Image (cartoon, rainbow, N blue to C red; front, side, top):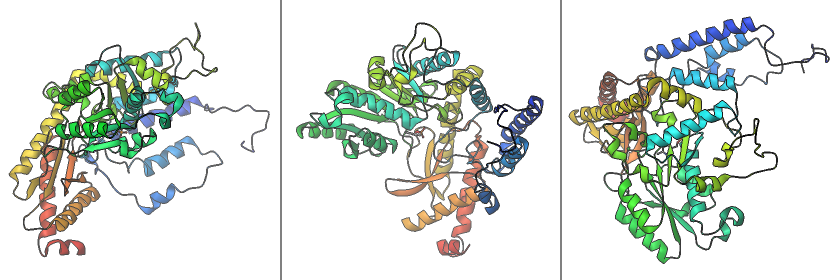
Length: 497
Ligand SMILES: *Cc1c(COP(=O)(O)O)cnc(C)c1O
């Protein structure tokens, strides 16, 4: 306790002067609007000077500081140094670009303050409504189970846990995985996201229970290889349990053949899970929804509203076709959480569908932005990003010094600067340098990866602010920086710069 305050005074976190707070809060909103409105005028990213880094090593604040001063610190040390993903030329890794109304919703949700573990309150109804809307957007039945989670990784864990429990052959919640008569086998393509390895490890199945099915030249799972692995596993006495199809791989955006995998799962009696963190939402995009048809037949889906719905982090969603299976995977009823006929506990506990007990009111930002813009607009924005990626691919194919490294299915473009007559290691070094220079000058942010063993740059266009002119600029800059680096004496010259 503050030593200057006598112990008879009862304290609170509320301000002494609400009017003063009001003034500051209005300024925060004004600054926030300017920050988002003018994002295009700033570099995508800039590195922090030492002085800023050091500011975050300041000691534990035992004593109070005026809020306005703390806010000024943030304006100087936080706001100029973001990751950059709200910028129109951020195409690195894979994430959404945020939205102002999404941020407002986060604020309102925090002011409401409700805990979404359960309870009889309006936020819980919004949470259930958003889950119902997402089911509808995915073509899932109203009766399905669903829950909002932190992101795609958690959503996949929820789906795969339901799959494990449903396929274990025993009451795995009581007996544990060691009691399973046969080892379970899960299958995903060799392009599968890393979160699935964490999931099978966490589920006690071990990484070797997740078999990587080779992908074909189109980076989609090779279905006949999958069929062979299933047969092989049955012959070895294992229990094939679940196929994880990816609708939009993180590397190239490839979409597994959902119909074929769904049919195979039906015939073989396997759980059909779809990791739709990137592509599931294409189901609302009129020009591209055919790419994810078959999605609606899944036993479980993981999707990621903080990607193509652009709500601020965090927001993922797990849907499980059979609500009972979903509930039976997680429901526990301790004596201190008993449902009551009336009052605040007159509710179904939402944590029965989730690993978390306390849970953020993350539904509000989805609810608000869907209502504000309408689902159709989000569908058009998804189509727009896919059209932009195809446009970028066409620019690359026309540029003599650029090489397209994978087919562009949706919104991910893999390419490299390749002026000819260069070995792979030199190309890798050259392209890495191009990528880093674009980041460091704040022109554009792309990432790099390997496709079929070749290093390349990767632009993932999940961004409602991107315009085609931004992609024209990207291509010009890659070529310009690439030619500067290769002029004179090839990559050796680059090292001296
Ligand atoms: C992003 C992504 C994930 C993980 O989602 P997070 O929201 O980052 O936890 C899983 N799978 C795929 C295919 C993804 O693109």
